[in-house]
Image (cartoon, one colour):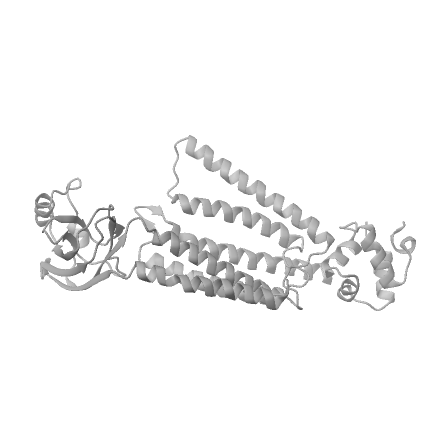
Length: 340
Length: 63
């Protein structure tokens, strides 16, 4: 394929994906947010409660879920009790958390005015009373508020997003993200080529070496799957989310493939410019690093001691740095050999 | 085993590995691997190299 055609194809895929983006924006448009400014003075929250209303237009035949989010950069020094009531005053959700980001169980909802009651809890007695009055289970001996409550002023953004439960916007978002990624990849690969051809050209020695590299990648991936299988059979569960485990197995196979390729000078095609590749890899690494640090700071990377799929950013950074390091080591080795 | 005859023929024509690689349509590393004896080229590549260096197969690849 010609370089110009590849760029047009990549741009077309990105353009098509961007056209579909309004589906996501529309799907997530029913967002209601409220910012609470809470002062903790001598361990007491002022105000102790807050209420806010929002309108909801719901089809009777559809099932909805609430997406609740009050995940903050800085942990609030209190526990929030949230109770959402429908237009008839029936409770449709109730829960307590210091910070939260979750979807509720899908349910039928009525159209009308909904009310979200927020209670800012700073002691165990209030917490227990809140749980009892809302039929919530009190966990163990309650909560260790001495670890949580600290005097100061806290600004917390509460977001209640209502969406149809049968429309999986997360899946659509991931799908569009993958399409944009593929489009960008086609453009990047075309731009890293010398000449007019967008396809990678490998000579006969490189093709043989690439075959060996694919074999190494396949065996490494197979071995990793086998290890995971044995661990699962033995009842040993790693503190890693399943989606991340799959991704890491895939990356492990990729690393073996890359390592063998670089070592045999078959990673970069004859018509590829390694310098342009290195620049692109460095830029992607920087971007992924920033995304990863953000997730790490907001505490979304490790939840309840489990490494979540958000750690993918760091896995990608590791993979790209591995490519850069391997390329550098190979260059130094070649240079030393040439000098000798 | 190193292919010193190829290296000498290339040097005789004042060509670098990169220049010879471009002439025969392979990567510089492949020419380097052939000269070092790390890679046995196919007959097609041997012929291409011979043509580029004005040599016969016997002169470059027969021991």
